[in-house]
Image: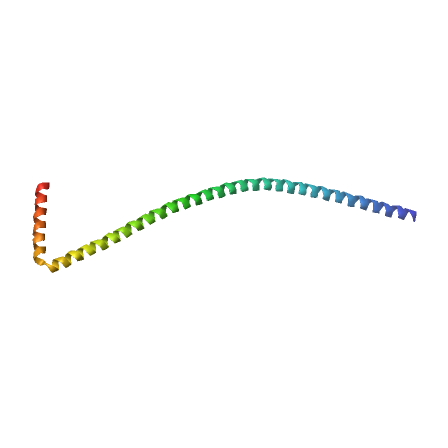
Length: 134
C-alpha cells in the first residue's frame, strides 16, 4: 500500500507542477497583453493630445471667423441705416415736390392769363439759354 501512496503523491505532485506551469504561462500571456494595452493607451493618449490641439486651433479660428462676421455685419447695418436715411430723404423730397406742383397748379387755375404769360417767358428764357450755351 505504501507504493500506492507514493504513486498517488507523485501524481498529485506532477499535477500540481503542470498546474503551476499553466498558471505561469497564462500569467506571462496576461502580462504581455497588459503591456500591449498599456502601449496602446499611451499611443491613444498622444493621439488625443494631438486631436485636442487641433480642436483648440479650429475653435480659435472659428471664433475669429465669428468675430469677423460680427464686425462685417455691424458695418452692413450702418450701410442699411444710411440707405434707409437716403430713402426717407427721397420720400421727403417727393412730398415737397408734390406740394410745390399742387401749389403751382392751384395758382395756374386761379389766373390762367398770368400762367400763360409766365410759360411764354420761361420758353423764351430757355431758348435764349440754349443759344448762349452753344
